[in-house]
Image (cartoon, rainbow, N blue to C red; front, side):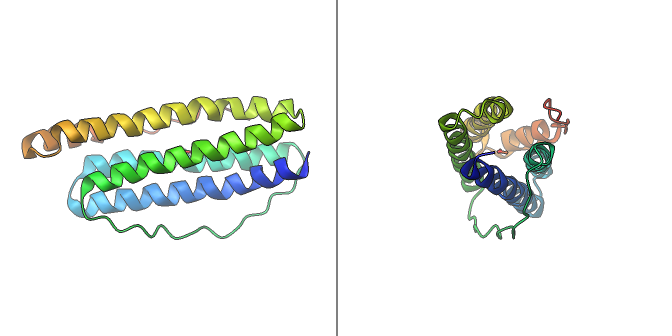
Length: 169
Ligand code: FEO
């Protein structure tokens, strides 16, 4: 495997674990606020991110490439209102999309079609995650300021359940 592609894939393991850590912190924020549905939504998101990390980890191992686990950064954002958390989530997903695109570009440059095929799932997944983050912001804009509506939105988000990723390596 090309050195740069390898570095970027290995780095993505850390980025995905950081994403899990970040969303766990979002979940923690909402739990403290008594919004258990929002806390659940971000908890499921954290579980999905852990799965993403493991997919990169397993892909490198399957390719007989070394995996190096690095330190996971501390989620250090301080939020003053609920909407800021949702907006930070969308921003983060856009950042992750840019990382996936960078790996894809590096794989494309060296005609690493196997890595490109592996990344295809993530390209689609990032589209879905940005849509989900956007939808959540829209709902919050519509319903967040009315306590009764916020209660119902919280109930809706409580129904999100974790399911394993459709990509199996
Ligand atoms: Fe694994 Fe939400 O990016």
